[in-house]
Length: 254
Image (cartoon, rainbow, N blue to C red):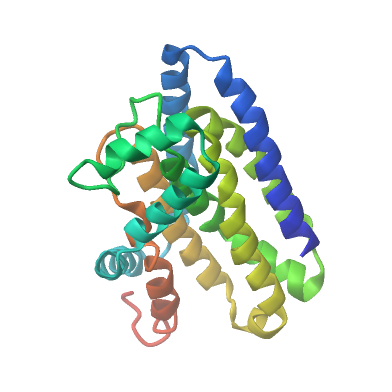
């Protein structure tokens, strides 16, 4: 668990630095940081997604996972959690933004990436997805739990810290609270690693990373205001891909 705790700490520290960075920026500069964050998300996402060698499985995972997530209402649930945290810990500006969203037809809708005042929940949602869906979180947690090898999670911790600075500069303090799902997700995987490690293959890790990359691309598209995508609803795509990998030996075209 030590590596996960370090990861949580770097996200929090990165958020604190990002808040100081954000506070001194004029509105136009904040918009530039927002756009830069969107571009970085696209770069990270494409680098992950292009590792896939099973495109049909990737497509099915996103389609079926998106339909399942939409039926369950995952995006709205995560967004509402962010709003609850925002009302308790956010600034007055965050609370005002959330009141505006509550008055809209779709309270969970993501606001324009061109605004310099994104909500607490918006930052919480996007940072949580980004920090949890990558292969480094999955593989690093298994290595930490099964082999006491913390190198991968420590590397991820450094990366997450710098990304938290950028995301906080663009989206505010909600980014820091993504440390909570990171702690729960990576901590749980680390504790279960000794029992689950033998089930994880290189193919599975590659394809899960590709799905995660697609989700990060969605974050970038939202940040750049190219299209509103309910990224949280696509989280079940990871589970669908996990199930599809079991069929690879029997269904070659996947």
